[in-house]
Image (cartoon, rainbow, N blue to C red; front, side, top):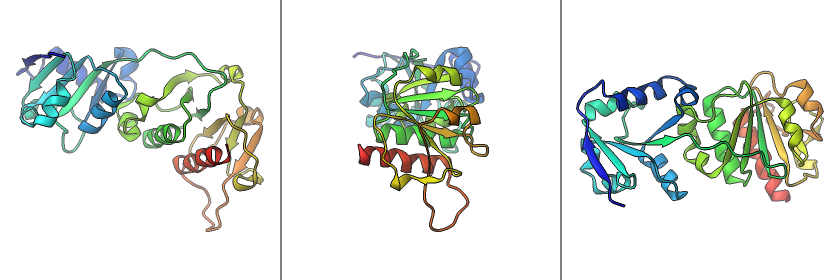
Length: 257
């Protein structure tokens, strides 16, 4: 691919203004119908999945590095800016110097038989990103986020997901009633369950449900789950972080499959 390379010097350039808006709000991507991913790791993760960005934005110091220049030129358009201007579109303490502009991915159709995770009002962006990483690692390719869950494509979730987004089918802003389309059993992870995870016979494929950090899974949704399971904690802590609990549950499902 031969890229078109241009330079921006004005802080109020429309492209840079748009990128700042995308960074400023966790849900701006829904209104603007676009994404901004920053950093060599995320950009390489996108490329490793065979996806082509709309545009690369790169700082002058990064463009002087052959590996980052080559990565930027995977995009049909490359925009170079000064290091100071790049810092205005970065939320990182040390700006990475390179990022990709993307269209919003098309929302996939819900797959009734796919191994899935369901997020019920999980609100911490770091937890949501970690949950996506575990889902991808253990082969749960469909993520169904109910209304009230942190935006799956928000900048903080993208950073915490470390590229997992590009391997998953993500559907958000669902109602609990939408889950009636699933044809795999739902399993609830709950600290209050009597049955422990390591003693259960786990069905696969399945849909694991993980709930709000403080309130857990909504009662009506929990009632539709075939099993409610807790993770044995011989050390005696009150509960596990939802992302840590999810990693244990998803691993247990794949080991048992």
